[in-house]
Structure formats: structure tokens, C-alpha cells
Image 1 (cartoon, rainbow, N blue to C red):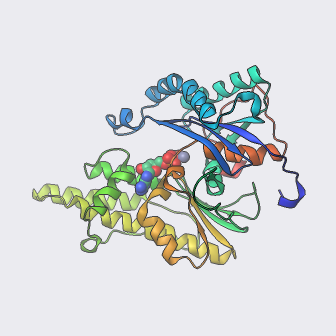
Image 2 (image 1 turned 90 degrees about the vertical axis):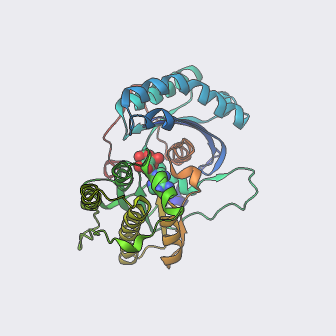
Image 3 (image 1 turned 180 degrees about the horizontal axis):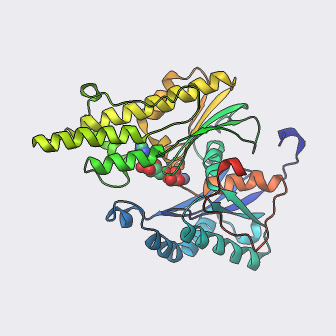
Length: 351
Ligand code: KG4
Ligand code: ZN
């Protein structure tokens, strides 16, 4: 989509997100300005299971979705009749969770006559980098420049993508096994830390983790833009088992720090190499793991190019990114039919 070729009438889109364990609704104006952004997290509910329990997630979405949508409209001081469309996550995600969001969106579309726009959750993460809070104190952030080298690091995905323009993606690489967030979650569990693992690992590291004692392996997968984190996870498992067999106390914070350092190094080095190779003008990092302080700092200090990372509240799942992307899709003329179904395994490469 060449930016200058399409007209961009003012548009306000309601976004609905329910792909995993966050029920969220938001209103975004013209693809960038957040008028409201409401997220109901189920994290506390799933923590007792050590991960997301799909049936529980689905039931919780049903209870939360309409109150959350009403709150998003109320906080934006708008009615449905003030909007131009309803964007909703079609996938990827948990089928039973996606269905709740998509059915809510269809119900509202039928009742209001507004167009329905089904969007990809991973693409939504990318568009979180265009958002800013309307009427906020801070200046409006600059838009990322194309060609843009984007790294998506979430609980289910780790992808390197080249964007030469809006809504166009060249898929460079992805994880061959665990996603970066999944590795954080699994290693946290090995270390006896709570779910979700990313924030838990970050917390113990910041409280005093020393990475210098143990060096965990980095899978560089030279000659490809792919990643692999399962070997790293197994390496942590092995040292934890060794210490347990010796009856020694596990240095949780130090192991967590070494693990985090290994993940950050591979993500940053490979992304910067790809940016150089494809002559990108900027770097974009998005998805839950981009909330990680060490990762953010490493990109900021080591990148010769401008780095766009959304504020922490927009890194993890939210509906503002779905509404923002929905505006860009609205401008291309995308309108989906009311028999649109969920796509639980929808890869970014098939958009
Ligand atoms: O994007 P997201 O909210 O949901 C998915 O689409 O998967 O990402 C969730 C993932 C979880 O694996 C979580 O542990 C990780 O993001 N995460 C973090 C941090 N905050 C969330 N990982 C590392 N450091 C963090 N601060
Ligand atoms: Zn996500």
C-alpha cells in the first residue's frame, strides 16, 4: 500500500481483542490516537495453573467482553454511531477465546450497521508502534520510517519481518521451536518463579541477578534469520538439575540473569544484522517480550538506527493495536462479511 496513493478520511475504529488471556477493547482515531484503551487481564486467574487454561480463558472472556466494550466507548465519550468500523482479532490465538471477541464484534456490527474488519493479532502488535495517547502530555511520536526491520517477540511468536511499506511484509525468519516469551515462561517455571515468566524473571534480575557466573549457549543459526530457544531452556534445566542433585541452593536470580542476557543478545544482534543487510531505515520491536527492560535498553544503546518500541502498556496484548491496525485496513477498503470465522493458526506470512 503506497502511502500517498490512498485517501485517508478521518476514521474512528473500535478494536476488540480476545486471542489469549486478555479481554480488551479500545477506540483509536486515524490509526494513531488512542481515545480509550481498556484491558481486563486474566493473569491472576491462570497463575494457579502455571499458564493459560483455555476453557477458563474462554468463559472469562464471555463474562468480561461487553462491560469492557461499554467502558471503552464511555471512556472515549463516543457511541457506536460515532464510529466508522469495528476491528476484531481473527487469529492467531486460542480458538475458544477468539470466538468470543469475533461474535461480540459481529453482534455489534449487525446492530449498528458498522463494517466489520478482521485483523491479524501479530500485525496488530506491529501497529502498536504507531499509537500514542490522544490529549497526552507528551509530543506525538514520530512514525516509523520504511523500510522497517520489525521483530515481534510474544508468548507464541518470534518473527523477523521486513516492512517496505504499510501492510506489506517480507517474512525473514522465525523461531524453529520455542518463542522468546514461551522460553521466559518455561525457564521461570524451572526456576520456581510464577506465571507469566517474563515479568517474574525481570523482577528477580533487577533485584540483584548476576549473569557473570554462568554462560548459557546462544543458538545463532548462522546464514538464516531464524531463532531457537529450546537449547537454552534445556541448558537451564540441566544446571538446575545438577544443583538439585548436589542438594545445593539454586541461584535463581543469577541463572535468570544469564538466561535473560542470552535471549537479549541473540534477539538484538540478529535484528541489527538483518537491518543492516536489508538497508532498513528503522527498527521496530513489539509483542509482550518487548516490555523487557534489558531488551529495550540493549536495542536503544546498540542500534545505529532509530528504534521504535511501544510504551510498556502497549507491548502486551491490548485492543488499541487492533483498532489502530483496523484504521489502516479500513483505509484500504477492507470490509469483512458477517460469516467471517476465526483463524487460530493464521501466520503473518499468509496475510
Ligand atoms: O504479546 P503477549 O502479551 O501475548 C501473546 O501474544 O503471546 O506476550 C506475552 C509474553 C509472555 O510470554 C510473557 O512472559 C512475556 O510476553 N513478557 C515478558 C515481559 N512481559 C511480558 N517477557 C520478558 N520480560 C518482560 N518484562
Ligand atoms: Zn500478543
